[in-house]
Length: 507
Image (cartoon, rainbow, N blue to C red; front, side):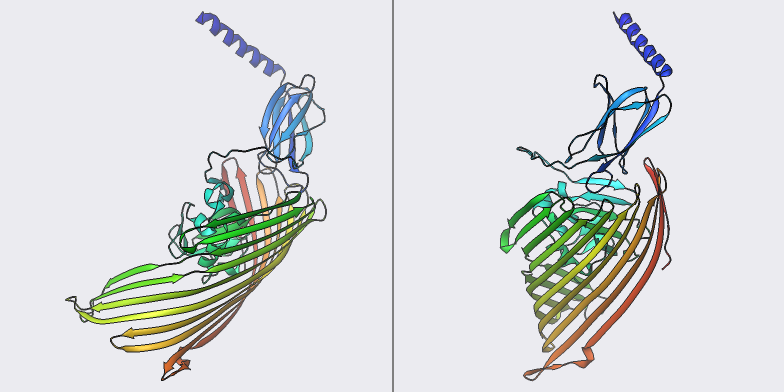
């Protein structure tokens, strides 16, 4: 019995080999693209069927440029069916494949589906990481934290990214990381406000987070250890859509988000508002040993409380003027206010642990921060994988800290006030030309102008008698103006799992 089975298997394999050798066919190729935007659809399913009896012949998946191909197709008449999640099924007309030639089906366009799903039961979700050339992508929508947390909470789940108790972000152990929003620098991500801004941006507003540890020349070298890029959501569904979400926690923590969108296919409008209330209660213990024989040890305890209240509003418009031209406008406003109380209690001791001095410093801080951002971008697509983009944005951030200090120590008591005014005003203009030179080669050439003005006013008042008097020895006003022009070019080669990038960036 076993011998009979073996003979049948061998015969089948010989027949298949002989059939393949005698009917070596041609090559079939094409591209799958979005009907509304003209952009390629990656990972779409393409099935090849025989036209005579609709028998399935072969299947393929599109690459990053939406391309698919079938090799050695037996001569005959066929049709293909293309499908992808969120799109309707697309069936091509019947076509003929010749002997050894190549058949190009051109572009097959998928139309977004307007149907509604029935009941869906989600049993589990896990974070999704995708490795690209030069960067790792974290898809926020698949993470449970995106339902209720902030961007700061999300970053704690990303490998190689660390967020400490005060919200400071580091990448691979270094705090020299640059954080971008939609590929552009934002005044909200300045050193002074970055930790607070990441806490107040709802995770649900972010589509994905890109961790770029080896930036190309198109990025400024501000981030020594790398770049983290936050890509915000952009809803493109037809008709009206919206969502409302609210979350509440212990000790007064709460947040709520509302968003609405309207799309016609060519014009898409979006708007969102978020209000968030947090609680900060830091407790830091600092014990130090010193070589000074008179004061060998210092023990310091820092505690504080703050209830920041943040408001964030953003709006955007996306207009597809033609099949190749797209215009986008966006704007956002953020306001943050809180009152922070802090106490620093320190004890100095000598080498024998005898107390040599005590001090307690109390702070009452009333802080307000306001930020604006507005900009627009234009994209012209020509050919397959080629585009020209130009964008401009203006942003401003103004913040005032009004600190009231009182210090009590064995050396005497003092009171002083500190007002810190800090502002950023930035103009950013960029233009880039991207071209696909072949199946594995891409070229990008660009120009960037970054003009930034920074104001810092540090005013101190000391108590003299019953009145506070300006202390000019500790008062300073700074204004810094910077304008950077940069030209860059990158050449990217990728074949299979291997890739490399060459860059040139005179500035």
